[in-house]
Length: 242
Image 1 (cartoon, rainbow, N blue to C red):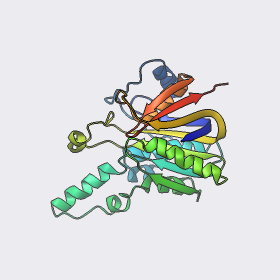
Image 2: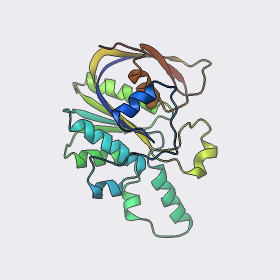
Image 3: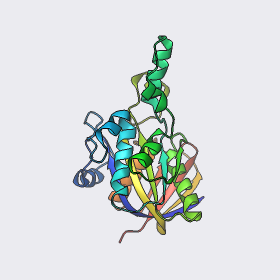
């Protein structure tokens, strides 16, 4: 499988990393994130909208809004391995204790809650997709972006995000490398600047961070060749920089 894109712009938020200078400094070192650091507050979201969203969704929508206010966007793709896990745990806990469910938790518990919130906040009824594909969610989101490009959508906003992973789930996610919230938003157009080829996965070290953060680290470091590991495929990237 071969994919190709031009990365027009980006926005990201992770513990201790929000400003451009912070991200550039981070890219000069091995890709490690200190999850004891706070997540930056939203700068684009209205307060009432932010209060309805969980940590990861809030960061995702805020990053998406930042890019949509700088560029025209034709379609949206949101990817998340676990989706609204914080909210769903609250629902399950309330059910187990025979308590009433929060109407907000119930309404916002679906996997497309974040992308729907972005279209509402931006007042932009765009074509949108929300998907989950395990550890390969980011890479599979790029496949969806390529399909939208082929369908005629020129500038597609891809947002990969995750919320805080509740501690109760930690023993059951042995390959999870980051349990705190983050969001990476990329505005992608058709082009050949960044090319990706997927191949069968062989022996490879376990990833130290989710794929989108590793991609951003390599791109900011201006690496011409790098690879991202997934559950079944190994993704080889080649990028050109002007």
